[in-house]
Amino acid sequence: MLDHSIRPDWPPYNIVKKGDNEYCISMAVAGFSPGDISLTQTGTQLLVEGTKQKQPEAHQVLHQGIASRDFKQTFNLADHVKVVSADIEDGLLMIDLVREVPEALKPRKIEISKARIEQAAKPKQLKQGDEPVAKAA
Image (cartoon, rainbow, N blue to C red; front, side, top):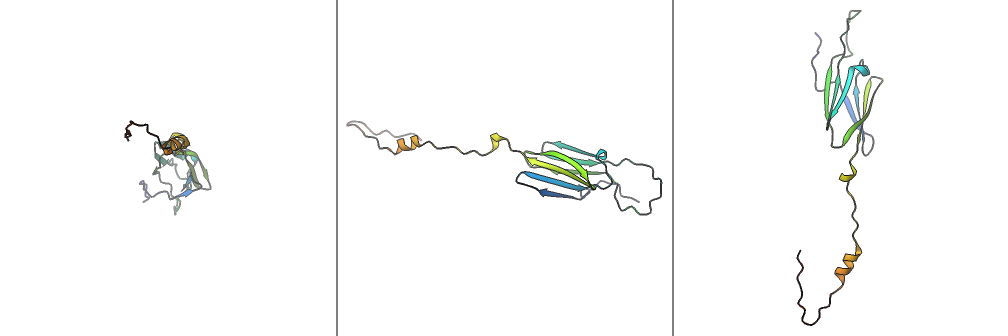
């Protein structure tokens, strides 16, 4: 009896960090063609599904070591990570990811004006009869 259930650990995969903001997921999908696999990104969730079309076997299979079962694998991505490309080569599905933080969310350096510093450093002279005024914080 063949196992046709969907397993959360199937197919095996690796996640590689290629640069500061570049990643690659490689999945072993031997026997699957690009038409058998779908990739869907919804927000921070990437769904990879493989559905093998059942074809009548022309020969009796004595041993099946190459799995042909359907699979569904979900990846929870970090904020601002998106899929930029995907291809199959030598039985591996390669999914390239990039993290692109919007400019508005990136840290920015704020210059401090010397004018205020210089003004604050200068002592103020009080004229006779003037009362010192406390500054509100």
